[in-house]
Amino acid sequence: MCGIVGYFSRGPATPSQQALDQAVDLLAHRGPDDQGSWLNANVGLGARRLSIQDLSDKGHQPMVSSDGRYVIAFNGEVYNFKQLRSGLESKGHSFASGTDTEVLLRLFQTEGRSCLEKLNGMFAIAIYERESRKLFLARDRLGIKPLYLLDVSQGLFFASEFKAFLPFVEELSLPWQFDENSLYEYMLFRYVAGPRTVLEHVRQCPPGSWMEVDADGCVKTGQYYSLEDLCAEANDRQLTDKFDEESCVDGVRERLRESIQLRLVSDAPLGIALSGGVDSSLITALLREIHSSPIKTFSVVFDEKESHGRTIDESPYSDWVSQKYQTEHTRLILDQKRFADIYPQAVWHTDDPLNIPNSLGVFLFSEAAAPSVKVLLSGEGADEAFGGYEHFADPRPLHPMKHRLSRAEDIRKLVRFPNEALTYRDELLEASHFQGANAEIYYSLRSYLLTVVNRLDKMSMANGIEMRVPFLDHGVVEAAIALPSIMKVRGQTTKYVLKSLAERYVPHQHAYRPKVGFSTPLNMWLQDERHLGRYISILEEPRSLDRPFIRKKGVLELLAAHRHGPDTFRFSIAGRIWMLLNLELWIRTFLEDKRPLAL
Image (cartoon, rainbow, N blue to C red; front, side):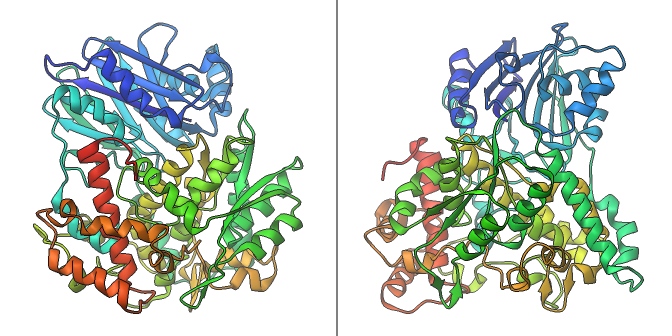
């Protein structure tokens, strides 16, 4: 696991060694074990390394092939690299290290980009071929690992986190501005779906895709994996009543066990992020079936037990699972003070404006886990792949606004929008031919999932922790899509097959209790001006209110309503303040100060 950064210059202005080194340093948290850079004419690659496979210096990156022709910078894990290595060795290849990086490099040498189809893992890859002077980039099937692209006339720049572009922006005066066309979508959903970002010239490499830059700087793109390819066969099963429920549950169990087994490949110690929910409880139970050694688990809890009548304390469930499956459990309390103190750090590490308040909880347990493990297994992705959110049981047709967290009439009082287009979401729905529960699942995997895994990656890597997500093994996702709809959503019961499987390992009331989802008591905490609430005054500063897109009157009225009136859980005042505050802090951090804020 690493952080990567690099460039392919198209003109005479090429970044200096100093700029590349500074970019690498901005990713130091992603790889505290080693660092390196490689330059040749108009191309530069840089990497920070978190040693997971082969902890020796033989895994140094960027890694150069034995013949000197290829150079790779690689972020992620190829879980089946040992099998791939055996196949290469049977053909006469030898290896100098025990890393998946070297296996990947050799595989690309022998098979080119078709090798991507053989990889089971999460990754962002950059490979430069010196003879043809071509740069190759690729991202894993479901977008678990980030890969940002800054494509401008001066060149193509790439990085695991877009803060690593800042030294190039400064040195070469690259365009670096807020894309106000993303405002409407951000204010509705708290994130921007698809390849676009909130920066005008920065986008994400789409999941399951590759990009090649030739010697002249021309870009060619392609896709090696598409969920749409599963559509026709899966649709035949969605409404069928000819299936055996027990066999469906058994099949998911086996795929999940295989996925967990694959994700145990590590020369560094690993543990589990155990929330106490169905997904992390299942991972803990299944890991115990195949792993007899000690297991470390980590969870974050709140002092508050309820928020707006909803239970938010999952500690009784995580404690029960830990005791049942004999783990070494660490429970961490995320209180208002700690949340407020690490808030500016989270803004810096997330890159995008903060979306999910519980991002700071992921930061906290990653920080606590770092002294004893380097790898954590997480239950993320289960809700998107198996239909776990409440809206999956909503019978209303899927449309671009269905999953919004704000009402359009509310946000129009706060912000001026250049346009109200939701182009990516519209195109996603128009192009999809999935039926039944899969229509919602496909939409979530291609939209909301990417902000979830971004949070997971950025908050864990901020503390040098690699998060692995067994539910997002492409085989597990394909198995979920293949299930009949009624095995995913049955009446008001979401994620039905996983809850049925969980009943084999936890009590019925544990498996079928209402979803909590690590709900941060945001409404309550923003009322306390000693801690998180102290940041609200930032929105009243002229620096904030004078932004050209801000409606000053609406913002001041919102803040007054927050201070003097009651709030709701859904479409809350606090939620709108949270979005405005995150956007303002993001602008100050990444566009104006270009460094972490000291607040």
